[in-house]
Length: 364
Image 1: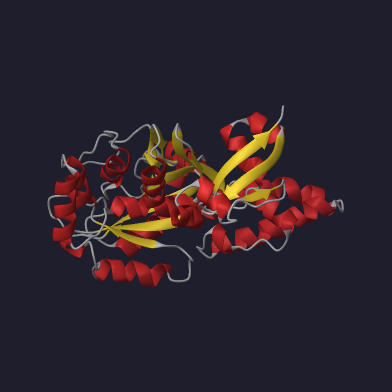
Image 2: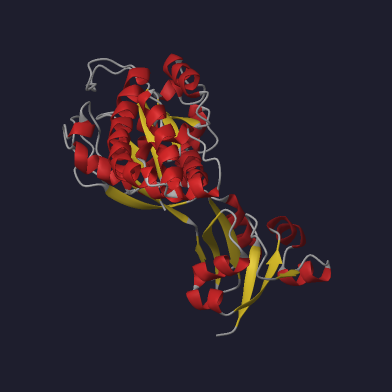
C-alpha cells in the first residue's frame, strides 16, 4: 500500500519526502526536479511499541512501515500530456491514497509556478487535471459498456448506471470519491475502475515556521474549501521539519520542537495520518527475540493477520492467542495476563483489533 505526495511544482513535496524517509530526493528551486517517482519506506511512529520494548526487553524491535511516493509536480494541461503529465498521472494511479501538498507560505525567494501564492487556485488546478483524466477514462468505458447495456445485459446496465453518475459528478468539477456506491456490486466496480479522484486524500498545508502550530489565513481558506470532503487537513512547516532532521541528537530536536510550540515533529503526525488513510492498522508480536509491529488492513481476520507473517500461518491456522495491548501494559507480561484471565483464544472468525498482542498456532 502506497501513499503518493502530489502538488504543483515548488510547493515542498520533495523536501517533505526527504523529511519522511531520510532519502535524499533532489530538492531544487525549479519545476520537474523529480522525474522518476522516489519511494521511501517510512517507519510509523507508535509509542505502543516503545512501551512493549520496555516491558519485554527483546533483542530487536521492528516497527510498522508505510510506503511514501514522491511524485513530480503537476501543471495545467497535465491531463493532455503537458509537462510530464502522462507519466505523473500514471504514477498517481499506482498509489492507493493521495497526500496533497499546498503551499501556504509567502517567500519571494521561492518562485511559484503561477506567479503568486493561492492554495485555493493550486488545489483546483490539481483537482481539475485529475478529474479530466478520470473523465476521459470513464467516457472510454461508457463507449464499451453502452453497447452491452442495450442488449439487456444486467451487469452492463449496473456498470453503466454507476459510470453515468460518476461522469455527471466529474462534469460538475467534483471528484469521484464523492460518489457513494449504493451496494456491494457498485463497490467492486468502483474499485475496478481505478479512478485517480476516487482515492482517499489528505491535505498538507505547508506553512512558515511561525504558523506551524495555529496555521494562517491560507490554512483557514483550505479548511473552508474542503470542509465537505471528509478529508483531514494537516499543518506542517516543511522547512522547519527539514531543519529538525538535520539535528544530531534527540535532545536537540526536542528543544527545537519546544521552541516552535510543538510536542512532536509534524512528519510523525503525517505518517500516522497516511497509515490511517490507507486503512491500515497494527498488531504486535512480543517475545524475547523480537517485538514487532505488523501491518494489516482494517477488518482483517486472525488467519489473514497470521498470513502477513507467513502464508503457511494462514493456510494451517488453528487458533490465535490474543492479549489486548492495554491489558499487556497493565499487567506487564503474558504470564500475568494469563493469571488475570486476560489471555483469550480466538478462532478463524476473529476480527483483529488495532494493538492486539498475538501469537498464532498453526499446522501445515
